[in-house]
Amino acid sequence: MKFIYFLAYRIFAAVFVRTFYNPDEFFQSMEVAHRMAFGYGAITWEWKEGLRSFLYPLIISFVYWILEALGLDQPYNLILAPRLMQGTLQAIGEYCFVKFIRKNFGNRIANMTTFFLMVNFFNFHIGVRTLTNSIEMSLLLIVLYLYPFSFEKGRSYWQYMIVAALAFCIRCTCIVIFIPLGVSHLVRDWTNFWKSFRIAIGPSLLLLAASTAVDSYFCERFVFNPYHFFMFNVYNQGSTIFGVEKFTYYLTSVIPDQLHILTLPFVLQWFSMFRRKKDGQLEILWQIAGTYVFSLFVTSLNPHKEERFILPLLPLSIFMASVTVVQWEEWLIKNRSKVARFLIIWFCTTCFLSDSMLIIKKSRFDGRGRIDVTLRLAESLDEDRRIQGRTPSILFLGECYGYPLASGIHRPIPTRFVACTDQTYYLKKAPFWLHAYIKKLGKTSDEITHLYFGYSGNLYASEPLLNWLDFTGDIIFEPNKLTNYKDSRTTDTVAIRRDFSRRTEWLATRELPPAAGEEDY
Image (cartoon, rainbow, N blue to C red; front, side, top):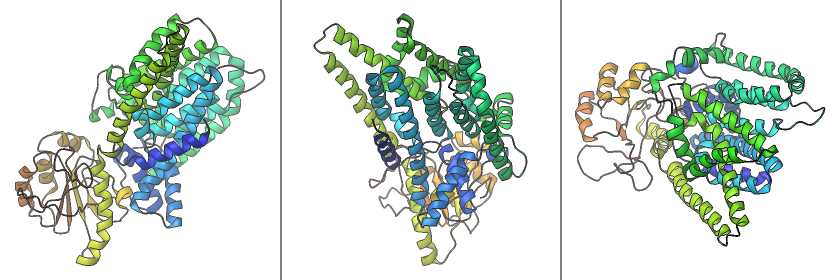
């Protein structure tokens, strides 16, 4: 398949995805990039502590500068353009990955892998988001394309080492994926490894030095991101404040969820590899499987787990499942089964239909209200200022970092919001965290013109709270569940009520911009 088809499909995915998935897709990329490009944007405590690399947001900031130069820096474009960039990177990675499979395993497995890469719902709606895990996945696929699974005499393979170094500078946790690949290269041909390493070490160190310089510049002090990340997340176990999962969480919960119907052929492939006769393809399979197992094991050691942390391993899972499906087809044909083609088509169709429904749900509905309400707010703020002659000021009362701020509003307006400190994170887990937080914040001043409630609890139970605040400005509610207070014109509750009676009067959506209850941008 030509690259243009991969690119067109991922561009379509970037445009089709309109939902909010995880705060990090904004606060570890777009918000920081917005601050770099336009001078304002929310910077969370992680960046101040040197736990994140500024390299990826810097890349996105170039996209923002181009939009500004072209006069296209509207709020929706500020969300779409980075996703288009990430979709392009994903297309490049997948194209390289399929070329690697076609070269080593043939057209049938390559075509089957391409099909499942395209229809997998998790790969579709997560791959184009501006998460560092997404670009980590794309760079890993390029590394696999450049990696010497077999050696050509006299050739060095330094290119994959430089791409791996770039991935490390962006997200240092990817080293757990590249360690088994590097060790395998060293063991199989140490002379070739050192020859390649001597060429790659210079450019790799320059990349690391440039990344460190960028981090130190924006942190206004010397920062070596891998060290700070290791000390906080591994040595001090600081990430546990955001939740702890059992060791088998990825194996028993995440992988079946990501692969969906492909879970069965993926599991069966591990048994098939033990029974298969040794050949060149099997050796490559075992190298990929070893990389997969090592990465999954090391990642599982960290108590704090999220499903996106193993996103880079998803294409490897899909590839192994595809090998099994092709083996099923070959076995059926070998046994002269008259329904061989029908069974394979039935299986692929089932995967396509089930994943398509999940793609629509995850890309168009789940969490869409958080973005829709932000974009509507951006549209209404200028009109509100012109008609009423007042300067908008917003107070976000919702889950910490649970909505786009500067990257969605694109207005330098005073805003306060709940930050993910140790205290506020646990407050959001409590049924009445809003009451506790407001008592801590104090009464809302007359300067607040928009109050945002991102809370799906009892809507009417909030009336005493608002009476205590004596708030008379615009109020916005955004419940999390589709069945609660749903606006039929959009999705996921982009609805505002002026009163708390059970009347069906819905007012036009107004929303609140960025800034901080604990922080300000």
